[in-house]
Length: 295
Ligand SMILES: NC(=O)c1ccc[n+]([C@@H]2O[C@H](COP(=O)([O-])OP(=O)(O)OC[C@H]3O[C@@H](n4cnc5c(N)ncnc54)[C@H](OP(=O)(O)O)[C@@H]3O)[C@@H](O)[C@H]2O)c1
Image (spheres, helix red, strand yellow):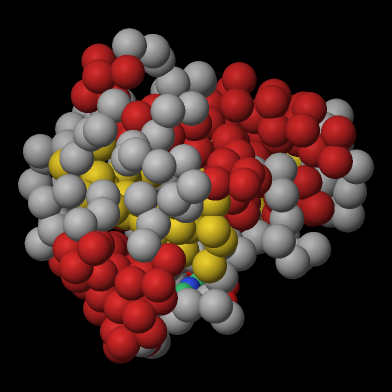
């Protein structure tokens, strides 16, 4: 893959390298990636961010680090902000100092305030987050855009074949684990979005980088579903007898409010790259195959 800059000895820095997406990007990029997990680089430490990037002088920084616990963010807004806003500002500033392109990941949760919405959001739709995490990610986008060579990719509901801890780190893994243990599982049926398979997102990120794109892009698998539909499809694929019990978000009782509709419109990406994103159903089938391969 012909990634930007000049010298193939110059690495691509993946920040948040121990997370779901960070791990996959490191695997995909192989020897040209320098993976920086939280232990190697805490992005909220401005001085460390500057000195680390001055030393590495990467040709590209991809930020896969974030505070991602949507419910806990409601009670830890300062901690969430120190990572999702100040941490991002630190990375953007380091990119400016070494004149390096920056890729930052954001979320469908920058939307959600439009209670009547039923049409996918394009990149220029006015954001309106409904929870602390979404607000922090929106502020993070603003911080990232202080550096003009920034590509912001909004995505949704990530899951992949790699489990970083052995415990379920995403919805698909959680359902797969419950499929062997439970007769029924309660799942919310009033949040529509597009869960996205990390290998598909990772490839799309690198295609946008290769095309030297900056600004905001929406990248998810295509189509949309509720978490109920998604869970049902997982149980089908796993040939599990576990049944989905539909519940409303209110009855489910999560701490953070979530959008009832946060489907992202991928058309800008698809026009730029000339290819459609795989559907969420096809993505799930690939996930199933990859999990079989890993077993
Ligand atoms: N997961 C989703 O469904 C989803 C949906 C839409 C958008 N996104 C966005 O996509 C990106 C990647 O998400 P993901 O699912 O891969 O997240 P993840 O698995 O939770 O990984 C995030 C990583 O960031 C690290 N981190 C947290 N604070 C840090 C700090 N101060 N300095 C350095 N690293 C820090 C975490 O380390 P610890 O584990 O040690 O805390 C973790 O390894 C994020 O920007 C997220 O907001 C995710």
